[in-house]
Image (cartoon, rainbow, N blue to C red; front, side, top):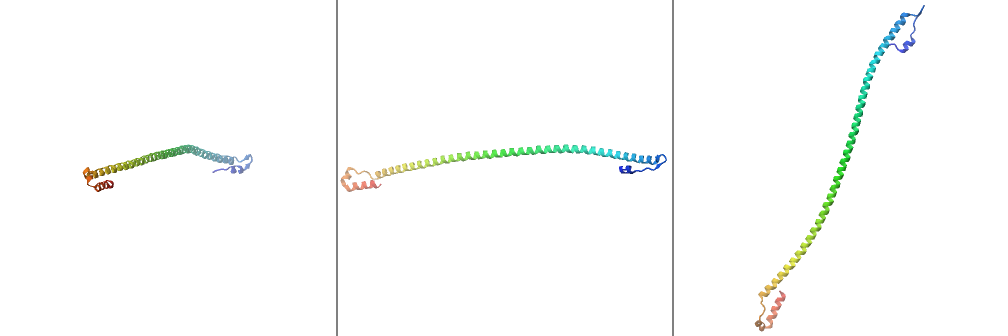
Length: 173
């Protein structure tokens, strides 16, 4: 039987010739002792459970602290990786842009050089064609001269008309 503090305060012993009834007091004291013993055992069990829970709580707090620090360091590492990757990406883009500008400048330079070469080749072609025409014209005149020899002194005596005809042919050719 459990005795509460209220039971102790309200307990009334019968009185007799010499005071309280000794039997009732002894019985009540026994009940109190049993209750206190039971409470002490329960208190010890609860203290042991509490100690176990405190140890478990400490372990959980250490684990939580370890996990939190691991999470923070992991997040920091991930952030560093992201920043590094972004720097690398920016560097790659800048290098690509510089290389593209370099290639573009080189292509423009080559285009200017090709245009100069084409212009020079056109001038050379025009000169070659002009020389060829001049050479052909010279050969043509030479052929005309060979086809129509110069009148000799004898032919000139034959008539001025024939000399004029040869001159006209030379001018036309």
